[in-house]
Image (cartoon, rainbow, N blue to C red):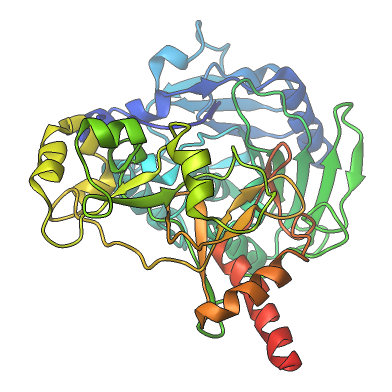
Length: 453
């Protein structure tokens, strides 16, 4: 049972204890994927033996395949099966990470919860961390989404020659947040087959799905293989995880002062980044109360490469975009204080705001020389030289050049590169370049520019 999205900011910790956050935005697994997963399982284990399914929902995985027993775990009674399963099969209503449970299965199958790490409550995270450390040499990563914790649990729940087959986001093969998980699997020498599902047909879900099969029996000697699966379930080997002939961009630290920086996360755009109409309504002045900011390039074309004041006013200010970031440096004006005082409690109860001494007091980032969108669908992200001096927010990342005068040359080099073949797709046609991947690009550019000089 796939759960995309997560809890609203107002969800309280006591609700988390009851697991309410895992009951949000649930999406059923299509029958096509159920059958595909079981085909892969029974090809490796003609009888899957004792099967466990964490986050099983209505136990639909129990309707297919060849196995001896099925045990599902579901935290939300409303999502469980309407009638008890026929013995010896069963669904246990409760938290899969409950301490003390005996987990001794042959196969783990299913579609675990996908809840963003920002939305995972500390109480649940603490319980999951503690349980996993009891079960195996688990290595935590605070950036992991919920499904990563369930992958660790899946591996701990099957025996020394067990099998794990899960429907999860394809991003797990490349994102830093699952790097420790991948490293652990490689250290164990287990075989891994990853089937990139071109069209998983989930309702309301944009994330690219895959079926990950982790085989502890390791008949192939710890080999990782990648496959593409089209709409007719035709399976084609993939040369590289990028789906092209190019290897994925490496993750590097900046070698010099030219570096990429992720976008500011102030604690909620609706509160901290205002439209022009909101700025006027609350009588906030530029530049004392607000400064220019961009959080998206989606609505503008890459017809020029410079973010000027004229472009900002035409495409952001006059079109009602959120484009004015609160200026909370130094002493704030009476007008800005009045605005902050009227912000409702629920709008500032997210983790970011609650972690600060003053909920609204964030550190203003340095203005970047180049702004680029971390997500893109073409050969490269939209990017602009930041002549305006706007602050980059959210999915807009920044590039600081060693010298501001370097930015035209760096920009010219960036516009020559096709990044689409060097990163992993996160959703249908949607690509993302991580900060350290952009640093890899920038390190290479700096070497080329230095060689020319």
